[in-house]
Length: 226
Image (cartoon, rainbow, N blue to C red; front, side, top):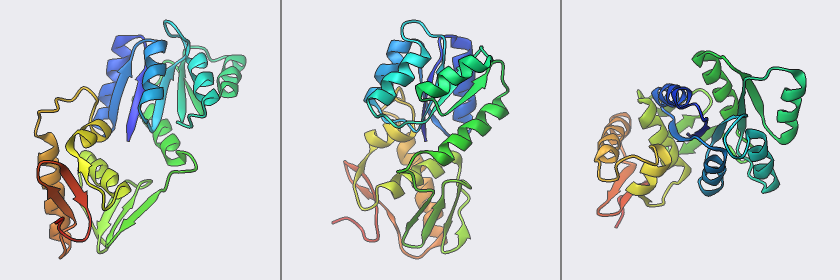
């Protein structure tokens, strides 16, 4: 899951980014309304955490612009204002939920999980390929009925591959979709995690499903690529 945090307070933004990354989410951060809107229009996110009071465009203006352009990404507004009128304005602008500052990380993560479960009409909560099943709500994966003991990042990696079965996925694509945008493209982090995921899948089933396409990337399918 990829989340954009738009928050002008750098300490708060760092706190949110750290907490979300520890839960296995890929996180991008913007500190101005204009930068946040640009990122939300250019990249595909599963969720936006959006402060209302921002330099440049406000959070409400960003939500209105996204909805005017029919961008369906769920939006969680972060606001220091708790009056009923301010909340109504945010929801009427197109936000899906709001959280009043100050808030605890546990409450934030619960709201994030709830919005990601709802996720929009195109979201499928259960993915199946061959004998592998992935439950995006329960955050659990099985092969042949046996539970796979996956780290949060391995789960995200398997999720993205199962959303794109039988298609070669480039390493750079995985870095962008599963890791942060600013992650070092020369790092071998993708290869390491793919190796661990492949071992766990292989230990739970007879047929290999995760294959390397040398010099290109990886493919999730029944047979070895030609």
